Length: 243
Image 1 (cartoon, helix red, strand yellow):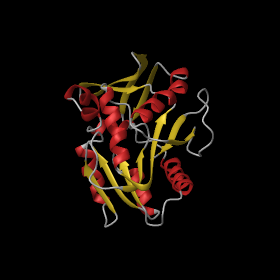
Image 2: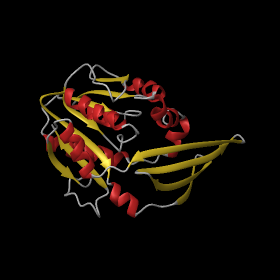
Image 3: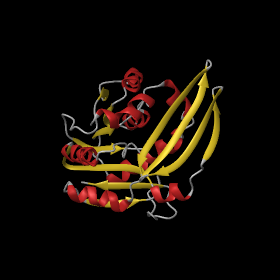
Image 4: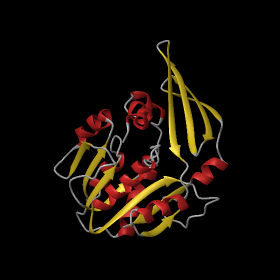
């Protein structure tokens, strides 16, 4: 991973403001998804899961709660520091670059909630899929839960203001050179902050090309967290299961 491509997410994700802006994420939906997904994959009892780009570990913690041995990894030092308070003998967190293979193999590797497509260099996207593949054991499954880019672009809200914990976040969304971009501006203690999120508008066809290049076999594609059929026009998510 080159330094210039790492800038936006290493800086933004490591701030407390990122977690304030997104504090209203639906844990009930996330927990239901983990139940549905692990049941569908029929993971072994006490199976091992790598949560790749785990953030503060909300998925990892629930997976551990329902019986799995979970390792959560993320590039954000602050997120991992927070998550470590929840560690136990079957739940561990560690700083790690998703472009690189982890030093163990697992029954499943989950990359959840659009934690892919941050890199400008296509080689880094390929490296990430190769890393996931190398971290799967003989019977393991890889899962990438990505946004449905076509649906997101069709329903893009260009401007929005959200007030969370007394902070007024001004959001501007647009598409530029194959990226879905969100500019985030807010003021705290009379200081103005500006951040930007940039995610590649990958389609299913784009992922299929990446999988072909890395010799990965796509098993199933779903369009939401209940694992309903994927529809490029109407599905909110793009959930891909592969090995």
